[in-house]
Image 1 (cartoon, rainbow, N blue to C red):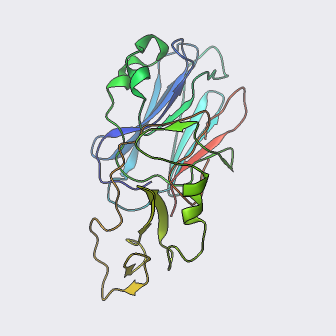
Image 2: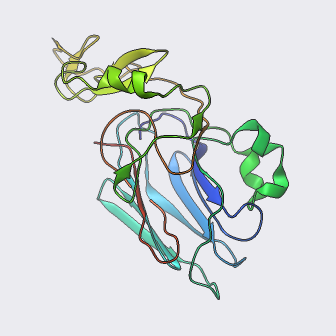
Length: 239
């Protein structure tokens, strides 16, 4: 993931109004906060030490295993928290929402286990290659970001973004993020005397994307979630 925002909803899923949920947000100066509950227990919450709103790419992994959830950022920071629940398995009925909630769900608060999530502002930034249990999946639907097989092919060629540039599809066009390459230009092929960090390649994407699993913009590594003891990881973004 890559963003300049200091707040926003990154990820959410629940059991549609009963007890269980998991929420990942940007808060407190661009740090990631993870909260979850099982069987209506007091929510367990952890806050990362590392801000991720520096307009650089960060890899984020959520690892769920029964009552424990671990948040890993860039393989350098790892924190875990345990919920004090009488049940160890998390129940999930909803889709997995990445970047925000659709309007119809924000107005139907009875279907939200965590009612405050409807007031979260959407995530603005880039998220790439979301995977569930190491498997890349496609969104059931998306809003303000169009993703289909034809558009995905725009980033499939090796020569779209050169020198390690990250390809995304925006407004039916392949867009290259060259900010971490030392190059610039439409395809990251033009050399720089020195790297200038700015808005180059940065898209403002006020998602919401709704998935029954996971996804997002274009390419990298990742994983998430657990159900009935399965370790479903979730890695948002890339390096």
